[in-house]
Structures are given as C-alpha cells and as structure tokens.
Image 1 (cartoon, rainbow, N blue to C red):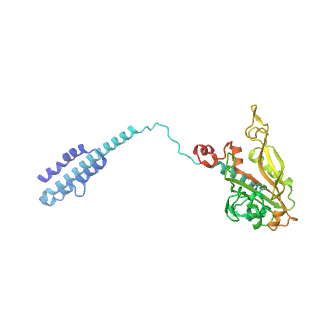
Image 2: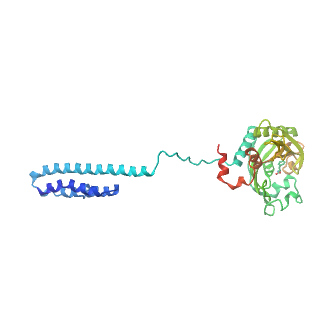
Length: 346
Ligand code: PHE
C-alpha cells in the first residue's frame, strides 16, 4: 500500500522540517503545510477513493494516528520555542530591579492657596462669584469712584484693549457687577486673574486676587476687623497677630490696610540673630487692602447709602501662596517647572 507508506512517512518529514524551524510564525507555516486544509495530510486523505474499499477503514485509522502524531510533534516544538522566547526575554530583563513610580500630577500652589481662601470664606457663608477679565472702564474705574482723570487709570498702569475696555487691574470690578445684579444683603468673594503693567521679583503683569464684599444694614468697621482677623488666623494659624492701618482707596471710606505678623520670624523681626528677610525686620507683612464701601460706590450701583453699609477687601493670591509655602520669587509660579510644581503634591 503505497499510499499508506507515504502517509506514515509524514512524521519523519515533519520532524526534519521542525529541526529547521526557529520561530513561532515559521512553526505556524509548517503546521499549515502538514495539517492545513490543503496540507500534505489532507492531500493524501483526498486520495482515499483510489483504494479498494476493503483497505479504506485501515487507511482511515492510520490517517487519524498520523494526524495525532503530527499535532503532538508541532505542539512539542511550540512549547520549546515559547520557553526559548521567555528565556531570551528574561536575559534582557531583571525582574528584581526596583520599579519606577508613575508621575502624579498636583495642584498649582496658586490654585491651592485660592481654594483654601475660598473655603474659609465659604465656611463663613460667602458665595463664590466670577466675572470677565476683560471689562469696561465703568466697572474697573468709573463706578469705583475713580473719575477719568484719576491716576490709577494711567496708560502706565493699565493694559487697555481699546478705548474704555481694559484688562481688569483688580477684582474690585466684581463689587460693581455683583451689586448691579443683586439686592442686599449679600456676601460674596470673587477670585480671578488681574493685569497690570508691572514686572519684577514681586510683581507679575498677570496675578490673582480674591475680592470680598459684604453689604447689609448696620455693617461696621468692627465687622470687617473681626472677619479679616478670623480669616487670617484660619489660613496662617491661630498664633497670627493682625494689625489695621489707616490707608486710602478711592472706593472705600475709611480705608484700612491689614498687616499680619511675619510668617517666618513670627513677628520677632529676626531669625537666629539675623534680620528676617521676609518682613525686613519689621515683624509685619502687608496682606490685605480693605475698607468700608464708599457711599459714592453705592450711588453708582443704585444702592441707598443712607440705608446700607458694607465692607470690601482685596487679597493677592500669589502673596498668600508665597508666604504660606515659602516661595521666594513670584516668577516661579508662572514658569511651570516640574521641579517646582512637584513639591506641592499632597
Ligand atoms: N482693589 C484694591 C487693589 O487692587 C484692593 C482693595 C479691594 C481695597 C477692596 C479695598 C477694598 O489694590
């Protein structure tokens, strides 16, 4: 039976082919050649009708045996190729090396400071509002009691978009926008970006402020004082001392500047016998501008200054972040250097 011998010889032929196979794709090619639908075994099986009927069952059984043998040979080679591949991989890869931590993002120090300030005021019942960075001369100056000849409106200080349209120089625009939209009583804070022609170690042409405004009947300077003292202690610690100095802003009367004891020397003015470089030896840091809302401002927004009173304050967020986190140069905040930013992961 020539056909049967031919078939029995397939195992030997495959073994020889397998000795030359050196990769899994090659092995697959080999499998298709021998066991595929048009492979060598299938070709022989297709010739079954050539045999006398009496020989056919034996041939069929032999075919099954050969098929199992061929399959076993291929699977054996597959297992050994997979072991070789793994060994080659391990030779290049040391699983005992320590892993590398994935980089985790973090919030920007300005964002952290802003959120902390906002959360303290939210806790006191203030609502957070926001408004445009490009605003009108009316919201930025006119309604805030700064008439056209006022020096704060100088081209030297203000970035104009076009006539009567400016990049807001302070978040006090939000005092006007809020009062035009609502009736008292109200208590809001407005965080956001502001712009001035200014740039050095402590000044950046864009920086962040948080405006506060509270309007009701019978609001006094004592309320302002209590509120800002509580706020500063919440952010900088219970030991923080606070001092109020008379000052001037066109839109508040009276106006007060708020100082707090130095975050570095604790108000001593010196550290280890050296003059404190943060407060320059005075023990105090200026942190807020504030005052009682000027009657002229109430009039500009249609509030009756005989009926309502209120206070407003403005806070520089960069200053809060720099004092809280010990950042020495304001420009670090805007360079987005990961070596700086990654220090604020919590
Ligand atoms: N707008 C003032 C500034 O930018 C700060 C301020 C706000 C002062 C509210 C008084 C009241 O300097």
